[in-house]
Amino acid sequence: MRRRLLALVAALSSLPLPLALAAAPSAHAADPTTMTNGFYVDPDSSAKQWVAANPGDGRAPAINASIANTPTARWFGSWSGTIGTATGAYVGAADARDKLPILVAYNIYNRDYCGGHSGGGASSPSAYANWIAQFAGGVADRPAVVVLEPDSLGDYDCMTQAQIDEREGMLTGALAEFNRQAPNTWVYLDAGNPAWASAATMARRLHEAGVRQAHGFSLNVSNYLTTAENTAYGKAVNSELAARYGYTKPFVVDTSRNGNGSDGQWCNPSGRRIGTPTQLGGGAEMLLWIKVPGESDGDCGAGTGSSAGQFLPEVAYKMIHGY
Image (cartoon, rainbow, N blue to C red; front, side):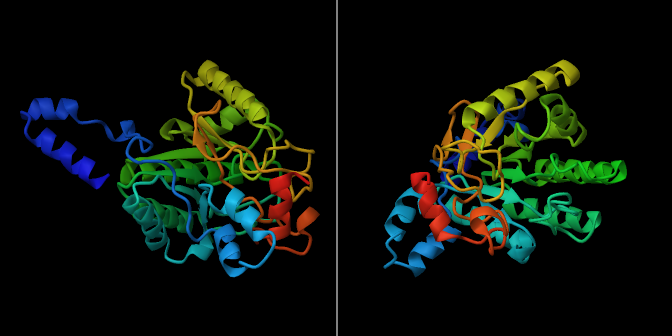
């Protein structure tokens, strides 16, 4: 990938200045999918780590084949240490292999304010602004996909208008940082799922949070609704964006756990199944595994006694087979 960039620079430098400027793509036109050769498999995912630590477990071959080697997002938050170093190392490792990494930024102030299972986040709006600026700076000009703050636009029910305004300001600021520092990154502002808010409501929230600055929006993160339900919802959101504000945006769908659809529960329901592996297209701009199958949603359902993000091999194994 670096060789291709150097060749482009050399070609442009040989042109007269006006032609070189005309030929150079704008920062917002960069397509990270064409700068790379497929998606990056996280070598240190929770599923990979469990398989490596439990080679004799009877569930390990299935988990290794069906989950651990599928390109899946890595989530970054307060647990990630110095965030610019962490994101820089991750996208650098992917770049060295000419692969496209998927990252999730999950550290907004008052995170999961209404749900609570994944509560936490930055200590203040200013702390978040600093954190996300370092996140984007770590990615820099390497190609990447970033899902920005899952649940942040769906989680409004118990928030005051002042808190909502504050959150939307943080998201708008985050998008500005990526546009400034990470020109080869496609950022998708999370838009919840079809069961959370109406398309009209979500379109308004996306617009007010600055989605015009983003590449697109993400759907179904950590949820179970079918790809068909999500693509219909994404199109409805775009219809609202077009009617109200005069633009539309591409969207991606988290298919990691939607193979059997939803039973109406979101917190470690049993009987769910892994979905279509990470790919381009599929009814959306991309179908992505954003949540690692087998990672707990919290102390609930089939994950009773676990904490959010903890890898549960039995849950993962059952999700492969749909029971």
